[in-house]
Length: 533
Ligand SMILES: Nc1nc2c(ncn2[C@@H]2O[C@H](COP(=O)(O)OP(=O)(O)OP(=O)(O)O)[C@@H](O)[C@H]2O)c(=O)[nH]1
Ligand SMILES: [Mg+2]
Image (cartoon, rainbow, N blue to C red):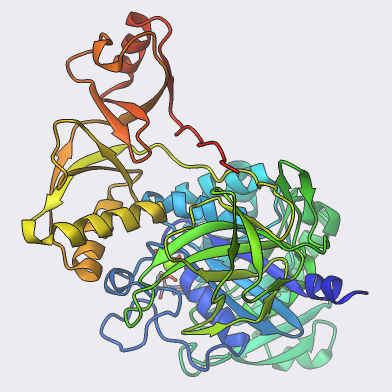
């Protein structure tokens, strides 16, 4: 086996997805704990505590206890090199989550045991299904009273349309979670709590067939376990690794991220069952990870992660070959040769410079402002990976700096957040330079905008909400845009690339514009710029 193949085989890259609050950030942190990347886990929502979850690094996330942006982290565990992507659950930030899923090879879907399959989980599940990636189900918060595990299996099938196969089974589901039973080895793993999950959970293991088990578990739990296991073996779907890897069957795990119960067995089985890095589609066909030439794509841009440095990073998923620090590569978009400088990886709270990286790895490149979402990097071939989807904004506001002396900072901040994909900017002729029209997919993004502009750029905003709900790009027009016949509530403008757009308050006005102006072609997707070579 070549070095490249060996490195590919030991890599695992996955995203954690779910409805808000199911415990994604908590589980991420516990996986880091088991991977030895952190020594003690802090509590996610203990606001007054000095410790915060490692992946909620943004100040606003610590204050509110929700994730507003995804974060990528790496750790090593039992010979594996793992890239984990913690995503925000709130629908207002789902564009970020969708982009991150493009960089992942599998998804861990969290369910809150007491809530089951929730609305946002359904949407994210559909995106994973479309990509055909394996989906692992972790039923979290088993330390509290929750739904019956059989009912949760039923919900997966009824609501999501996927069959499930429990890999382990919980013991004590009524707020008295004691451990899990492993169906493959017929062993019971029982835990002892101590420090509320700050360090690894202590446990004992015993075979279900070992007579000593009678002294270790309450009789009624043992009886119930035996009955349920028998039922599962008879009536449940058999374990089928090929179906799991195709995304047709979801293996199911039970645990509690907060107490660490069930986290380690989940990690072990997950790493074994999930896929090593998978190929990606490009205009030159499928690019396999074993291809010796380095290729990758930018899926996330983020500034000011470190208040001490105020720098900007472009996150790249390595698709093939070996990446080396300071190597030269083709950069498409702009179609230029560039040097890939100061590559970094994230291990919990620390960043480390990397000398090399392999397929599946997520690296942050120093970005002086040259990278855009979806850009391709490749060592020799001028290929281009599939575009990363951009959502049409649904909420709009006119913003300007509260203090006109802060105009420069304001413009800088707006440009930055727009390049991160956190907001989209538009202009209208009658607006002065110090004003901007901002479009977002979810209204909470406005809060993040004000917060970050104030805290990272020192510019406070005033914001007037606009009644528009739709933006459409003008792809083709029978006459000058100014001469189009439009309703009085329809407005003209341009996007950040100077493409003409129309803003509408309702779908009815969109239809009317198309009817009254034969030959007018509108699109809800931003047109893609051509590559200059
Ligand atoms: N009882 C219990 N609470 C948990 C468990 N896991 C997480 N929580 C709590 O659930 C809340 C939400 O946890 P997070 O990890 O922030 O959830 P999230 O899925 O990352 O949320 P978003 O990123 O905002 O979507 C926090 O108060 C956690 O302490 C668990 O296993 N048991
Ligand atoms: Mg979170």
